[in-house]
Length: 424
Image (cartoon, rainbow, N blue to C red; front, top):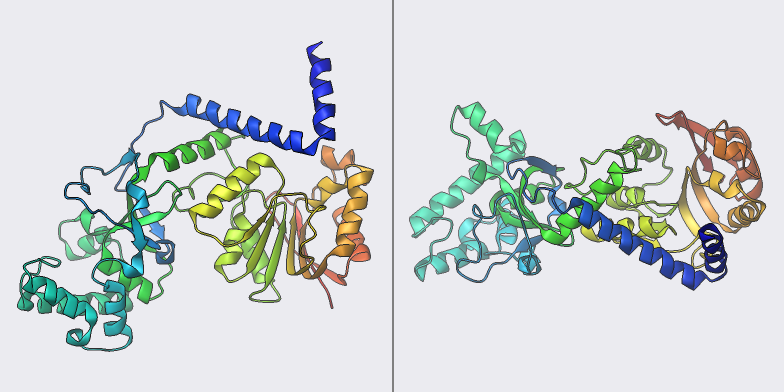
C-alpha cells in the first residue's frame, strides 16, 4: 500500500514541475536539518596555528571593530563565533591608514615616504597623541618606514616565507602572532585581521600565495563546512571534485586538479566564454574564472545547486549559474569553449534524452569542446538506449555539431579518455 502511494506521488510530481521543485527543496532542507542534528556534537574549535597557503587576492575585505573590548585576537583564537561581527567589513584597499596605497606610492611609484599620504596621515595621528604601529614620534616612524623598505626588498628578492621558517634560519624564537591572520565570515569570505604590511606587500608583488592563519570562523560557515564533511562521509568519504576555498581544500575528492591542468594545457585561447555542462559544485568555473574566462555553470540537481551557489558566494565569483537542464537553456548558444565531462553518456539512457542531445549539439555554436567519455563496460552505459564506445561517441558529436576534428589528449586516473574537439 505504501509503495503504491509513493509511486502515485512520483507520477504526480513528474507531471507538475513546480510541485517537483518544491518537493526537492523540502528534501534538501530536511537533509540539512538531519546533518545539523547528526553533527551538533562535533567539536566547535580548531587549530588556529595551522598554516594555509592562500593567494593574497582571495583576501578582499578587512574586519572593522569599532568598540573598545569588541576585539581580542588571542581570546577568540580557534573559536567558532556567532553574531554579526563579520558584517563590519571594508575593502582591504580602504582599510587602516591607507597602507596599500601608501606602499604603492613608495614601492611601485618610487615616492619618498615623506611625500606619501600614508606617511602624512601617520605623522598627523602621532602629533595628536595616537601611537601608530608602536611609533610615538617622528623618529620612531622614520625607523619603521626604513624597516618597511627592508621588508619589501627582502620579500621581493627572497620570496615570502612563513615566520617559523624565518625564525629557524635566524636561530631565533618563533613568534606565531607575526603571521598574516584572517577570520572566516558567514559567507566564507576571508576577512583580514592582522599583518597588514605583509599582506599589502604580497598584493603589490603579485605573489601566488602566502602563509596565513585562520583564527576564528563564523558559526554559519562552520555549519556549512559540517554539511560538506557529512556529504563526503556518506558518499564514500569523498566529494566529486576539489573545492577551491582554502578552508575546504582538504576535503578528499574523486577527481583532483589533473583534468583542469590537462584541459588548460590544450586550450586554443587564453580567455573567452566557457560553458560547463553538468557543473556539479562549480569547480571548473572557479578555476577558469581565475585565469580570465567568462564562465557559465549549468546544473539542475537541487542539492548540487545548493553547494554550487554557496561556494560561488564564498569566493565572490562572478560566473553565471544556469539553474535548469541544458536542454531548456536558450539564452546563449555561442561559446568559445564547452566542457562536457562525464555528462553526455547520461543523455543516451533514453530515446527522449538522446534526441534532445542531438538537438543540443546542433544548436550550440562552439569553437572548442572538451569531452570526457564514460567507460563502455559500465552497467549504466551497457543498459543505455545508445551504447557508444568513446571513439563512436566522438564521431557522433562531430556528425551532429559544428565541430570538425577530434584529438585524444589524455586519460584520467580512472582510465576515462578526454578529447578536444575543434572547429576548423
